[in-house]
Length: 219
Image (cartoon, rainbow, N blue to C red; front, side):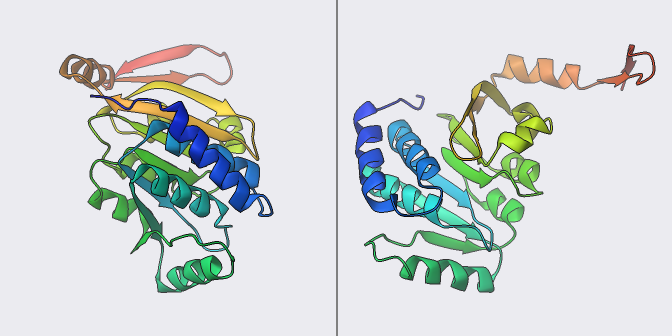
């Protein structure tokens, strides 16, 4: 079993989001995220939200989750953030259901979730690597999104370092909407691949900044 792309679901989620979010900030990015969530048809969607950030992405994910019948959970850091988040939803005149909210530090909360198939995190967060690494993904694989991810990419962000050794990055792409959507599709490694990764991790590579020479040491 694996995640399978559905053009019809992607189109339905996209159109509904365009109608709802056309007057909101970051609407173009939200429309793309909604279409991706609808198209991949995940059973479990997770978002990590931070205080002070627009909820446009949350509205888009809520729309997509409604179309595909998925469970959608949003993590907030504390009770103050929960209040800010729910009030932001109330300020919009759209009939959008507030997702299931879980309070706590995201990288700790992520460890409680099992079978995540679609995950969205803002690239401006400092704990980005920890959150993606802590999540427990579905055996069908998972689509991971780093929104506002162009700067992270320029700073050397690598999906291979963001997920645990259990996962293999099948493919990744950056879509130039908003401040960039850095997207990866990951899947659990086979036992043979895990052995290779474990063996490879015993070697340490260092680059001499003066000469440019690469030195490899046994760990």
